Each structure stands twice: as C-alpha cells, then as structure tokens.
Length: 354
Image (cartoon, rainbow, N blue to C red; front, side, top):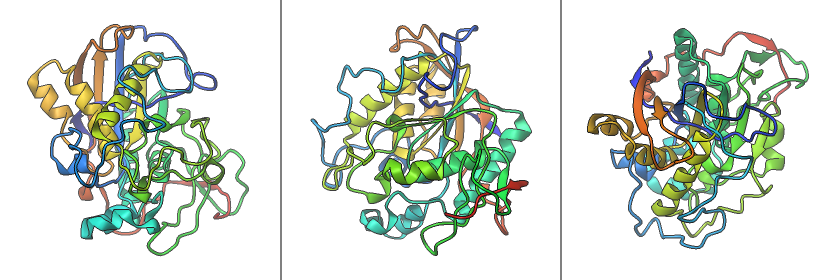
C-alpha cells in the first residue's frame, strides 16, 4: 500500500512532450521509482554514493560525464516539474548478484530484464498508484531494459493480448527465456507520455548489466516511448574496465535535477536505479527542510520502491530551494510481490512476442 516518502523526477525533452515554464504554484512534485539493481549505494544504507575503491576506479575524463559546471542534459531546454522516484523491479542480475557479487561482471546479464518477481513488484505498484489516484504528467525513464519494463508495468496502460499487430503499443509482447527474460503480454500507453533519458541511467562501467542495449535493438521493443534523449545508437558511456566514479554520478544527478526543476510539468515520475537514485537523493538531501526529512529521503531504495518529494524555490537558482518528502510512497522489496502467477492487468489486442 501507499505510505509516505520522497519524490524524484525524470527528464523529458520538450520537442515532443510536456509543457514548458514553471508550475503555477511554484511547487515541483517528483516521484522516484527504483528498478531492481543491487548496487553499492543500496548496500551502504543511506543513499550516499559509495567511495571509489578497487572495484570502482575513478573516471575523471570520461566521455558522457558532465563536469562540475555541467550544462543541463541534452534533449531540450530546462523547465520545472515535480515527480515520484521509482527504482526498477527485481532483475535477473540482482538474483545472481545476491548469490555472488562477481555475477555482475557476467555478460549473461547484459542490460538485464525483470524477473517474474520484478514484474509482480511493478504491477503491485501499479495497483497502489491507481488506488491513490496518483497520475504523473510525464514519465522519465532510464533507457535500460529493466527500467523501461518497470515503467511500462506500473505506469503504462492496458496489457496487450491475443495476436494483433503492434500499432499503438507502448511495449511489445515478449517471449520468455529461462534465466534471462520473463514472458510478458506487452502494454498500451498510459495517460502520461514517456521519455527515455540517458542522464538517469544507472552508474555505468564494469558491470554488463548496466550496459545499454543499442537503440536499434531496444527502441523497436518500446515503440510507444514518445522521445529518446539518447545521443548514440551504441553505448559509448560504458567502459568494461572503469566504473563511473561517485563524484561523476553526483554531478550527473545535480545536472539532471537542475534540468528537471526547470520543466513546466507539475508532477513528473522518474524510473531509475539504485546508484543513480542514491546520488540524486544525496543532492536532494542538501535541500531538506529538516534533518528528519534528509534522513528519510536519503535511505537506500529497495526494488520497485517509490518515493515522492516536493521542491519549493526558484528553479532559476538550482542550488537553492526547500525539499520535503510527501505522503505518497510504495515500500517495494520482496513484500511487494504477490504469491502465485503474475497478475497481468486487463488485456487489449496485442502484438506477437518478439
């Protein structure tokens, strides 16, 4: 069920979706959703970036990383918006990584899919959101497969079914593959447009599960995503030898938040990952109205956990403002997955599996 927590937000380019300009009430509401990813931030308790160590070499001059005075991310001019923050559901890499951390280095889990449990978590969040009447104006999602699947499950429309074509689908149906992919009927678009943005992807490097699939592969599977704020077909950010440093992750989160605050939507949902949400909440924590609010928002995210925050202040000064958690939250974790088969929502005519 829904409780109280903080909000986070996603990026959306203005060329295809969303209105621009500050919200009428000057308040930005952000909902953060986290997909399943057992990263270092989550293992450290509070949502602070882990220190660079032997497993996380620093990447001081890597392409794709904003510097200390980074400009807003590509994909349009910045505008304000308030979103929920959501972490993706459990992925196959999470299951393997909990048994052996070295599994994160396996190519078997490249751009990992959601497990059956992960889909159950996403659909549990879907029910909770609908029960609370919570509807974002925009959904910003990481372009990795597990976040796209999580976003489609919890914020998409009706499930596809039957054997119809893919016209109008948000996500196509997919066949299952033991240990790698869960069979899914696919989804129609929901009420809010989707934007896939590279700046809210997971910390990258070293772990193939955090390597983005080429756009030519992933984009056709999610034809209803309104815009892809991704600059290259291949993943040019990923380095198999070097993990993105905590410092760069925080800079990226800072630039992302500034871009987000400048958007015009009043309520934006962000579907992202443990490490990135940890960095984003670390930045939000410095804007907290009280130590209690800071402690609440900087706790690490469980799989498919959602938090929502409000930010008040002038978006023209991104380093200033007051952040407070709101009452909209979903606990995520293993308790968010029901027993029994995946409870797919009501179906409409669907595409054949891909």
